[in-house]
Length: 139
Length: 139
Length: 139
Image (cartoon, rainbow over the protein chains, first blue to last red):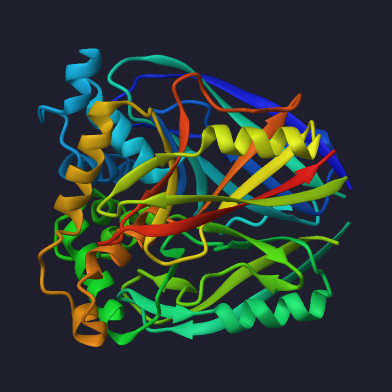
């Protein structure tokens, strides 16, 4: 049993920018040479979320529309009274989606479905440099 | 430390069909003979979600009603312009609930609460054959 | 590779009481002497959730307001017909947020962001004694 970790780094535009990180995770898995185990993906930050989605243009519009209904951008959040940075909605959306995802590895492959991609969603209200931690345990 | 994996297979009716997979997970844990560790449950697909709930008839109605409010079935989703399969709401609900769940194992038992069951929720708009991957690491 | 587990115990007030458990997780990590691996946090119960948030007074008000919109306290839930305990909203909120979170460990530290805390949220409608299971695998 061994551990292999790496970071995926990229730039985002904020405002529910959805980034497909599947290929980057697969590359790290290749480098690890681990064939069976789990990969934990984790976002070190409080305005990004991680989940899976069918990464196609329609859902890239639908998902932000759903989040806008759940936690609207222009509501007068208490968070903004604390920090005046106007991103209360970003924090709420991030806490709802969550910062961690764990995917099993079988025979050196992620066990994703055919139409299922791993995505980072940047809920912040500005462009950011982001990193996602990929942590693999296995044989 | 060892790894044991299996798949749980079942049929679903779609439309927020909630399936209690707790017993199936316990059976796999028994077969694994692992006494301490973690079990990762993962859905290979983009229209199903996994979480825990008190599996009783009332919540089996309440949960779909909440999801209908969050991502209504009859909204005109951009996803449907791409694929014309009418299940944009299914994808959104699945991404919100998420495809992975990790449960610790102690003394050969899942560390669930008394009224807490592990459930797969099929958000698709048709019946499906489904599988959930159960991946155990431990001693 | 070794396994170390412990429980974090505390009292809550219910009604979306948000408890910062980051320091308690760090203490368990110290006791474990594990430097690289993952910690899985799990809630044994169906009316609590776990996620991360920037733990500041504004978001401690904003988060419950979002949850009240998603699953209002005073709706007439089917769950209440089963149990008459009036906490249907608690169960729905808990299933939505989810009971598990996995955080990588690097060089003996949790890989959290600077403004990111691990929180337990008690969605129940009464004060409770709670526990969160912390399960660490690593070297």
